[in-house]
Length: 244
Image (cartoon, rainbow, N blue to C red; front, side, top):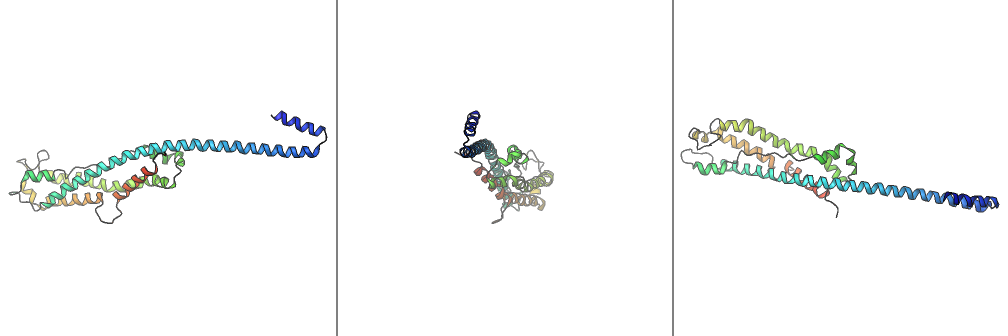
């Protein structure tokens, strides 16, 4: 093709057709420029296509990760709600008269007061995105902001969860087990049934209730951490849904 154009130029020069030669030369330059622009456009389109494909794969993995995290989170919240319900049942029986209370009924209602669970989400995809150049592939600006802020949102929520677990293991359990059998509970003859009527026993449940309410965000109209993390998870799932 280049030899063909060169031959035309030589023919025009040999025939002393300078005007036509100049016009042809300008046309050839324009043609070359158009070719270069088309090549650049094809290259850009191809790069965009590759980037879009990579983004789709990342979003698919991210969506799957957060769908699983949401299921785990909801299971953890259920455990906290069960613990709170048992704790409040115990409080509803105060003050307890050890001589008259039906211990079997009482134990059945309060036995889940000390169950615990913590939210430990999988974060392989999101950490890979944030810590590598792959993060630049996420084109949605809102999703990028949510991913950047995720670690802080998670830390804020887990701070209350971890504090509640620390209190339970280091203060509330030891207080109870000093007086009541860990294995057989109140029905064990060695358990101090009179302990049920003490302020110390009631304070255990009062502290447990406060911790669980903090985790579950029981303050009305408060922008609490549980609400914030739930909204963040739901929004990330929504924005990372695969395109159909």
